[in-house]
Length: 471
Image 1 (tube, one colour):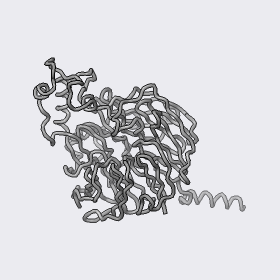
Image 2 (image 1 turned 90 degrees about the vertical axis):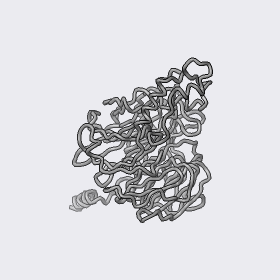
Image 3 (image 1 turned 180 degrees about the vertical axis):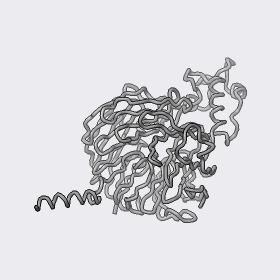
Image 4 (image 1 turned 60 degrees about the vertical axis):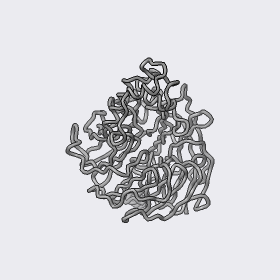
């Protein structure tokens, strides 16, 4: 009888949620790339000497911490080697490290990019890492390799390197491969690595957005933002369900969901900027030998921008390359959109509920939190909007921390945390008619990674270190 009573009590505890799920920040920006933790209560004051629990040295890479239970996972690029590392949440000691050998590294911008830019994803049993130079590699939580899915070396516009991260959706791994040529979205079996489907994205030459999921009225869809459009896909087959057009020419940001809506915000050079100059003026300035095309040695913008404009990759900048870029930029729209989910086909005219065209971010993704959408853009300017109507509560309010912003904003316990590229952290209160600054700190080195919020702790990766902050 006592044994039966014990079983009943244990069963009741699980049903009532007494045994809470493992603390987790399972992918880029946490649960479903939202940037939000509804349970975390990290300290307000974080910085050198303020609430540090531990600090360790880590190699430089822009990927963000991924957390499950007592483990932190990071991708790194160290001494020419691609790595996946696991650290203890308790004290930061390295639990294991695995080298992922690449026959050839993808090209990447020396200061802005990295071949280890993707944040890992985990479900507590599998840890999936993506490297544009190799493909997908899956380990268990103890570092045993379970499978590997090689993919062609990533070829992105301008050779900035890969920027997307994988998504685990049930028994599938979803991956964005919006490349300069042969762009697509793919699904793989989480247990075996077998490719389940691949859907071409012919009009998405390069994007750095991470796939995420929306479920409304019982219908689950994969959302993927890219050049000029955001599209929804059937998770089972990869079939495209709907498209909303009117996005930037190149997309770095990831959408978020809330209040029964989808929110996208992004900026890149587009039709709202100065007109794309005609090819004739370009040739006149740079074609030194008069052959009607421009070689790298003749190009005044440097090798990175030469490769970005050499669309067909033949080593020459031609009128066809030039006009292809101009056509893409003329169609690009820099915008914040509130989108109603659902529908079939092109739903741009019927499902865009509202839009706004100022204060837009280049790299940081938007944040939905407590009924509002927040944006942070270069120059340290924050904006806040009513999620249902798009009405701005405030627009481009200065946070007092200048510079570029790559890390995306995250939120917990009524506060929003943002980090500038040059290392300044700002914490401000959610809500209000303007951002109320609660705390600022200067780490005095580059921060490109988005912080992770788990329990009463905040994990922050800088150029050379991984910090754990807590009370």
